[in-house]
Image 1: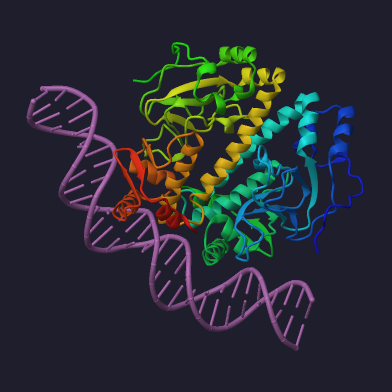
Image 2 (image 1 turned 135 degrees about the vertical axis):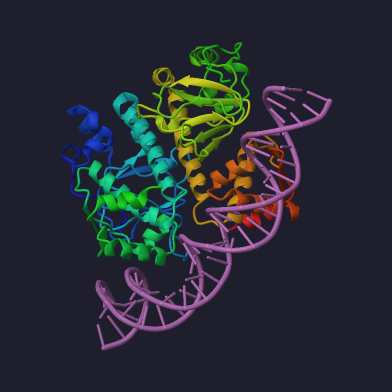
Length: 240
Length: 240
DNA sequence: CGGGGCATTGACTAGTGTCAACGTTCGTGG
DNA sequence: CCACGAACGTTGACACTAGTCAATGCCCCG
């Protein structure tokens, strides 16, 4: 049911990884890249809703999805539906908020089939002592993560439901574009219930606004896929 | 009207600074501490609502309050009342979310008279290359800041107004306790309007809940001062 | 074929926002 | 020193967004 990660993927070298430009060794010379390649763990792919990191376990790794969507949830134990704290696209480093803490504060799940790299934090910092570009990349990614959490915050701060839904779709579109994907048509492996949790709304409210957007020919969200027909319409809704 | 910071305070050495334990040079030996001391700028104190860092200016400094409260606001230009994005107590590093960006994304104001250290980021990273404890402290503080923004997020996520007000007071109390202050009586140089903005509520709603807490002998917020009479009452209100 | 989770839809309601009016405090300048 | 005004705090009435509840349909998976 759950990929434990004790087994490893057949080797996928950093050199040929599609996310290399967004990862720590982006600026490393060939020799050092192969050295970095050795310290990364590549567990077998995780299936839908399997636990990648469990809340409360000791902090050892940063994560990076080569493909798939990673969900951060408040507490995977409790029976009540998960609170969807955040989502991470491929190319976005996961787990930075545990740095300086002994244990991980929330759980991370695969939203759909996900190929993951685990980057041992201790080895990463040791590596950074010899390769300053990696040390610097870590600081840059933490700064970027702080700004991303700022946008996450603004998604639910001072906004009505229509705002939130439109801003959510625009934010996803923007982030995918940054990763070189098409911005107007993409997979979204989340249920409406999860979207509602992400936006701090009731599921019914999300449903009503999604149907409205569909009726107004602005965007279609169905079958875990998003199609944006009119960015102008979303921008109008997202205005404060 | 506004301290420009071009003049400097009479020297307040890091060695005798009350916030030293919470600052970057906490683990430095005497010699290096004096070297660090040289790179810190100490402008004249900032008065109430004066701008310490203006949104949009180039990123050059991290900030640390020796005393006083720093407010982070969405945009100091617009005429509409400021959105209070976050607040920082003495001992909490300010401005980390600009790391990796060329410009600062929001404005920082002094809530009341504030004595500030400006830490030039370029010099800090250079210093970090020779003194790994400083490099490490920077990573720890960014991790801590990510977790603090997580708490900030949870203050407005999935909570009703009574929750927010109670959690707000408890969070302040906890943070002050960490800085060695008494947790049940402290200054809070914010208007109810600013508290409302911080909690994403209408000012009237904040007022009603504060009066209720006063009537129930749980906590008193008046004259920019907070007195907590019954933590149990606050905890009950803060429960999800 | 059956069941469980998810999506859809309508009716109702509680909690907040909005608006308006008034009181209070504080700083400023006459 | 006092008068004034602006900003903030207080209070009540009202509107309205979004949450809750309930029922039904749909779809996927076993």
